[in-house]
Image (cartoon, rainbow, N blue to C red; front, side, top):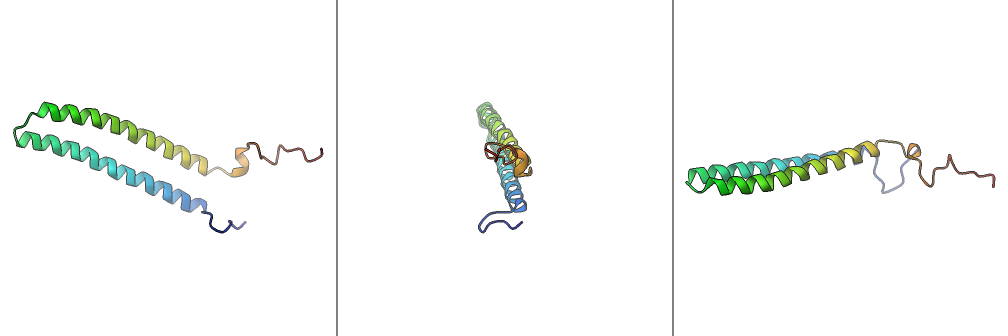
Length: 101
């Protein structure tokens, strides 16, 4: 069966979702490395390290929660997107519609 014009195939959607997730992970690695670098710079410059550690741990923990949520959402989207439409059911499921009445 051909897909309608302008629609995406399952493979294209999967590649786009995986690219989004990998780009988000690269961003997460950048944020975590920025926190590590700021702690390093405060040690080198003999600044107050406690403030940097506290700010990094608070913002870092919130950011790791965000990474976890985005990972779970993308995982569910990928799993649900790989199911066939007729298997999902729903209001317009043609298997359950009685055409005799």
